[in-house]
Length: 308
Image 1: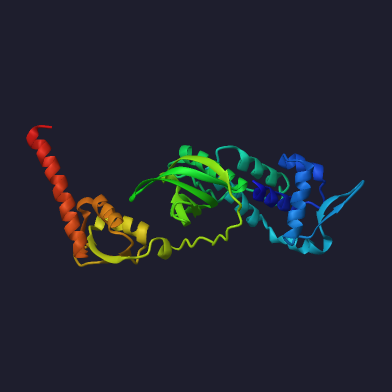
Image 2: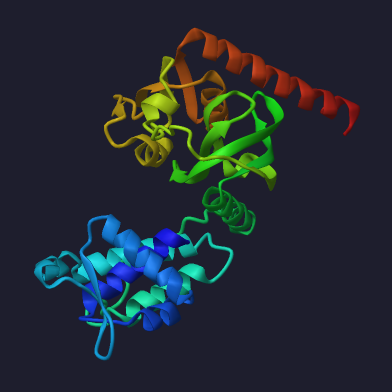
């Protein structure tokens, strides 16, 4: 992708005194004309790059700007490579791995020792995620709408959107775009999307707000739960909500109080805790849990009587 190439070119220029357009073109596997357009884009972004024609010429960052070369330290380069490596974990091709090698080649004195930060963004769904991410990336770059099947708690729908951002948040991948069905910007979870295809070109002149990904906005609190957990659940409460999310009672049980966004999500979590939790409030959640568990017990009791 173009932005990755621009980052790579800037990294090379920050580490080398001078390099020619053909050398950059060969390193990044694009044409000389593409490199010259990239240099113009970097200039327009405020980075003073000069080109000198003829023997001994080449492309370099202007002399007066060289003090800023120290902006990329060895630690900075390690973080850049860690970021690229994390993208490679969900890539369907070798692009990011090749880009890392190109950056390493021009920054050997800045990148030394073992990698200390390893990030895997693929979760449990790498095989299905990689082609989805690649298709959406291409659609964003080409300004193409995408159509897909979407599965949500409210039912299955066919959606077509103008995609603008790929987002990794809350341990999952999302696409943010303008939904032509709802006529508004929406966030869609990739794991719930299927049969993604490019459809038509769009102008790309829509004013796109930055997505507000705060938990308070996406999952606004609707109520508060109060529950008693078995001491064996302490590790889970710490992992999910932190060490200050509960108080230990005299009998060792854990008194937990927290806001939650929706009843269905809370019910699913409480049921997953089996007999290790007792909900104290709100009353409607207690009643719903009793109803669900009674129906489950009745179903299995019926199976036992019928000999299944």
